[in-house]
Amino acid sequence: MTVKDAVANRFLQLCQARNIRPNELATRSGVTPSTVYSMLDSRRRDVSIVTIKKLCDGLEITLGKFFSTPEFDALEQEIL
Image 1 (spheres, rainbow, N blue to C red):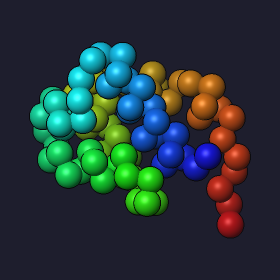
Image 2: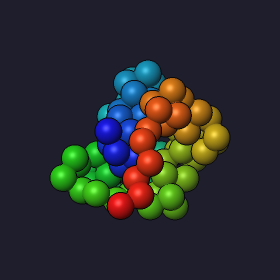
Image 3: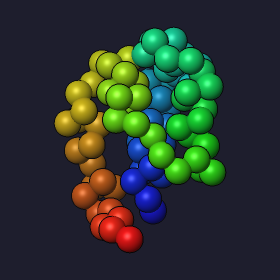
Image 4: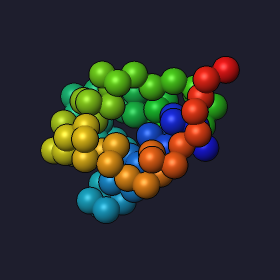
């Protein structure tokens, strides 16, 4: 799993736990729905930390809480 995939999966988990859809996450975060759907798209490689921060703000969680999961701890190095 890549970091980008882990980020997308984490946002999907948080949305499910709060019973909200990606469109609502976008509205809460002040970003466009296309930004959220682009981040969730497995074909897209990158997502910016600024976007992650905005989405975390919309969910009222810190970046630390967002990244504090076993999935992120288990990621392999991505050095090419």
